[in-house]
Image (cartoon, helix red, strand yellow):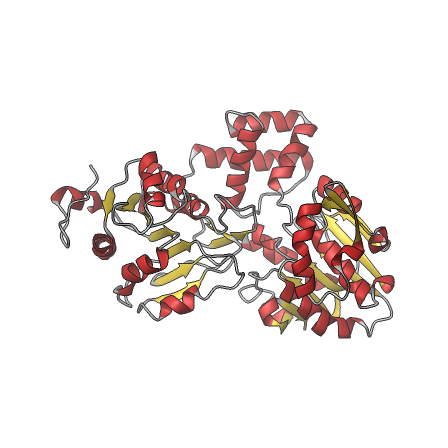
Length: 209
Length: 273
């Protein structure tokens, strides 16, 4: 059963059992409209020593230049950077997908970029990142889908779920735009449905689990 | 790393079968997006499984040609990243003008968008007549399209802003004739273009060149194949020759990093050391 109770900082026993024995190697996050504010909240309190790499697709206008890494670097102690082609994924780093290219994760734990056609009008597309990450990491992946006005990410999250990964969807009732998280919920039942604040606490737990 | 799933085994077998039967080598392509393209092709070509697709491909060359259209990725636009073309014009062309004749290699030219962009730039700089351009690709259908020089009117109109931002000196429409929904590019742009089937994965260097453009091609390769391609470029380029890559491609992490120096780093334009 998914959890959307108002219990802020603690997990129920049932929720905790979903984490026990699970080693998370990477976290992928997808967000669209309203995503910047949600991500600021989510990433803002992560400590510099947070080990698990976090890879993010945030839909932005395709301006060919992105200052996302710069902007977010001011809000988190972790290292923030734009993902480069064939770059090895390092612990303790937050990666953003740059505009104009899809971002995939290879089984060798490095990134690949691609200029293939946009998916759901989006390039980078969340589905692209998430389904490749699901193949690369299997059960040791956590996927988080946040606010947005587009169905991108629903299939990718379902793919993570089918490959045994942990799935967390922002509670649509709380999301600035409910469409994106709701599209995922229409497709499958994730491990957790939570407001942002609880997702933030859960991320801390992912490193320790 | 996880044990390979059935799908991963099927993908590997299909790629191996294509190599053995048709000598097209996709074995060192980046796996994640290749899997996506093959699964897409499988659905579009009405196959229940990759194994079924493999059987069809092995027994029918036409089916292979159909699949090849999914395995290769078409170029998206002309004058993509106008700043790159502007940098070529302002910082590479002055060097190129010092050569009495020029050889330029568009590696992975696909359907020709990059080629026509380059030919137009050379023409405006007075270099086209003394240039030989090698436009190579592994996909014969793409090469045919590139040769024909016919593009959709709607898309070409969308390239006009790129052309202008790239420092274009004319009106973009001077270079093509529109009819119905299509445009035909000026045939004189291709007078000195040599179209050829060439694979960065299996073929070797065929000529000495002064400038090589290979943009958004190597992102589909794994690290080993990227190294091979960069080795070919290094071998082909003349002393102090130029290399242009895609806006997100870099040779910083490559074994060839010391063989090239950045000329315009932000636009991924390098020079052979």
